[in-house]
Image 1 (tube, rainbow, N blue to C red):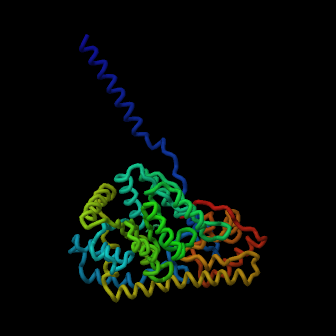
Image 2 (cartoon, rainbow, N blue to C red):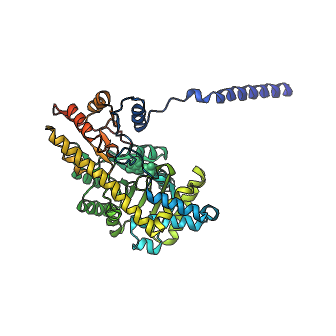
Image 3 (cartoon, rainbow, N blue to C red):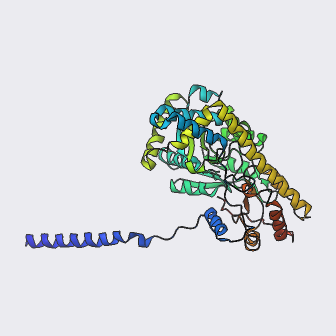
Length: 436
Ligand SMILES: Cc1ncc(COP(=O)(O)O)c(C=O)c1O
């Protein structure tokens, strides 16, 4: 009898194991297709269009006045220096520490106490995205139950990053579609009304997608309110140097917070300002009370990274540390960054000028008031559709145009097309939250 029972149980277990393994083999059959990334959708549509007049205003990477991607001369010189020094044979932790030190000097200032006293935890990260992801994970692990406030609107991937880290998100008001400027009163209200000690994500310069940054006085007020409310500021610095053409000026918001004694977090990216998007090179830093705490936090960040992707790639890190560590190459970089920023500013001015000359009934001042790579045009989703359909001009549905795609050769065509789709005087007051 006992033997018979045991045999029956064994049979049942086997049957269950078999049926489970059949289920497991077919697990992907239950996976739904992921929603399309808005930016990739724009690029796909652009590539599929055979028109010779087509313009891609979706991608945020810098292009030259011929619409071609650029490898900066400073990067070429750093490449040559790395090749000559056979660096790869002698990589040590000292090299990556130097990389982090040079990176954080850019945001906090080389003469700041933070740098002098080494009171920070800093790690190389997989570009700006990876730096945000590491921070979100740190937040979840060591401050469970905390939330992050994201600006409305913001770079859409911020939502994905904190969602995947399983940190609850809220938004704070930032943009006013009526004035196409900052809604400062609402922003202040939201900061005041958030529970004390909340996490806020802030864009220190060239806010994506609106291109609108708080003024110096407004940053001072924000910093003051953060002190009063004991909020934690996390800065996502994706465009240092390409907003104004001046590294120091673009770090001004962070310097204000630093002066006010905040402990802050900062994600840095070299994708735009060095044109190194494909290298995935960035840095995450978190300011600490003292050096010892910095070592502790760094060890946790390294452990998080280890489980996610082991260690970060070397080549981009060598390029950036060579550029930042060699005064001559760094000077060249600063010059090239100014060229990029100036070209974008020139295209903003020309686009506005042509629209005004065409007699557009709309106010286009915001094109030149906004800064950085993106122009939050105010075009409605229908107008964006019409631009693609009738003029082969592609941008994401919220009307965000990458000014990097505007050139001397296509700016007149673009202005004429925008004039055509807006000539009845209508524009969007709808804010789509799909910027990438
Ligand atoms: C605000 C913001 N943060 C982060 C990133 C991420 O950049 P990357 O991961 O390419 O460095 C971007 C890129 O578009 C951005 O606009």
